[in-house]
Each structure stands twice: as structure tokens, then as C-alpha cells.
Length: 134
Image (cartoon, rainbow, N blue to C red; front, side, top):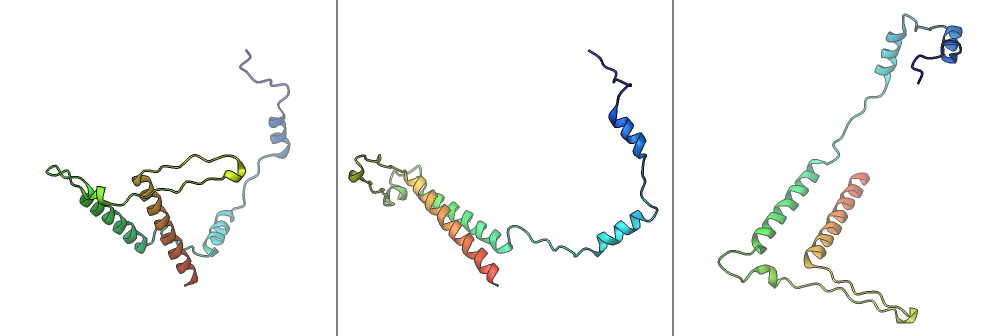
């Protein structure tokens, strides 16, 4: 394998020799600084507003409270989690299409997670819409 470049024909070197090396004028940096300083100032806003952080903190607090209330204690087997009504999804039957979809059984944790996600999404969309109007 050849490690040295072919000195006979190097188009890049010939183009550099033809064009020559150009350097900026002596006032280039001062003009560049003037252009940069004349640009409008950008005000950066945090992605999550202070109210958003309070909302997240409140959600975490409610979640902690719910876990501490519904978690089983070591002394008794009667927990409040078993008293929460279960949500069953209705079966969809499409007999007119000559096939049936399988029934969808979701655990309570998954249903609560989905409902919480939907609720938090609606709250987020509502506050974003409210802030854009103002």
C-alpha cells in the first residue's frame, strides 16, 4: 500500500497555488463586532415557568400522598387500594365486519397512569394556550 501522496497531480494544491491565500482587511474584526452588537438582544425565557414547576411539585406531592395512603401497611391486610373501583374497558364487537377484536384488559395502574397523563397534557395545553392569549 502506498502511503505517500502522488506529487505529480494534486488538484487541491494546484487550486490553492492559483487562487493564492487571501486575508481579511485590517478593519474586519471591528466591523464584525459592530454587526454583532447591532443585532437585537434576545431575551431567553425558561422552558418550564415558575408556575409549571409549582404544578410539577404539586403533582409529585399528590402522588406521594396517594402512595402513602394506598400502600399496604404491615399490620393489616385491609388496604384502601382494594376499595378503589376497577375500571373495565367495554368489549367492542364488530359482527357486521365478520371478525371480532380481542378484548382489552388493562390493569388499574395502567389506566390511572393513562388518565393522569391525559389530565396533565390537558392542563399543559390549557396553560400554554392561556399564556399565548395574554
